Length: 63
Figure (spheres, rainbow, N blue to C red):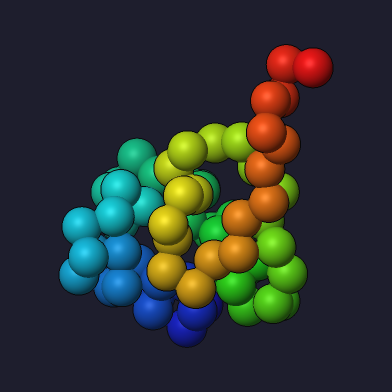
């Protein structure tokens, strides 16, 4: 829960969209990856440049 709260505060401070209410579930997913120290595998742009988040995505998801 602390990681989630920190992530939300950091996103709010830098103006990242993950701080918005409609991305609550996305924020939990991101916080879980950050807490576990594992990359998040996603092509969803909401996670790009998330503070403390390592993002793995396919170059072309439609192949």
